[in-house]
Image 1: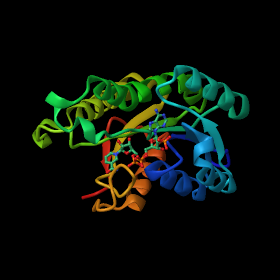
Image 2: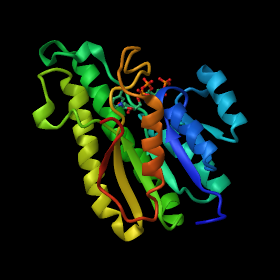
Image 3: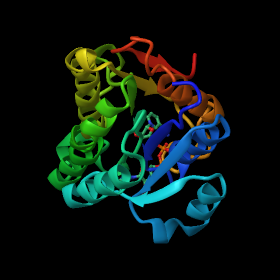
Image 4: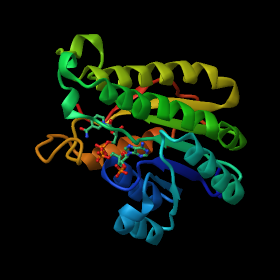
Length: 229
Ligand SMILES: NC(=O)c1ccc[n+]([C@@H]2O[C@H](COP(=O)([O-])OP(=O)(O)OC[C@H]3O[C@@H](n4cnc5c(N)ncnc54)[C@H](OP(=O)(O)O)[C@@H]3O)[C@@H](O)[C@H]2O)c1
């Protein structure tokens, strides 16, 4: 792959961990495709990313038409994709305790955090295959392991547990295509989602995303890389 332009698409690239990862990968020489749900509402971030050489594309992971449009745009410009980072996600405090959680919130969590990464990965598969040694990175959480559960945030935990199953299963299914599929657990990081008092380091989390991206071509697949100790 040396000398070849390497393309990485990151969902939810307009703020939080997605933005940090986009900046870092651009600095490491990757050609970044920054996927944002509403680029016009994220103008300063989009402008900064363009200044880093990134291409900004509209992509709502819950909207299949927007995913299809993004695939067309990428196919027409790059022909291939070396890495896909399924970073976009939501976390709703309103669903802290399941008995009172509105069903619509649980549905949205599953749709955005589990179904979204699956459909985005499926739609970008032909471009990932064309790279001949690609990487898919799912930003997840290991707090959803049964021994870590505490009876709260059922919808969020269900969504990330489903994402972890998808990671393990696609790692096996895509081995013949030379596509590695890994998760990254960023820790509890101070983004809009994590809040200002989160104890872990978003820069370290972005480094772990970059490490997982750069597993392309190594054969290391089906792991969850932990950013925090
Ligand atoms: N923060 C933590 O402590 C923590 C811990 C474990 C795992 N994670 C995971 O890390 C990832 C990044 O989280 P973060 O902390 O950076 O959160 P964040 O600051 O809240 O950013 C979330 C990003 O996801 C995007 N997004 C949400 N719904 C979307 C959709 N339907 N389509 C496309 N983009 C969408 C948001 O776009 P808009 O600006 O348009 O809303 C935003 O760019 C998530 O998957 C999260 O679950 C975070």
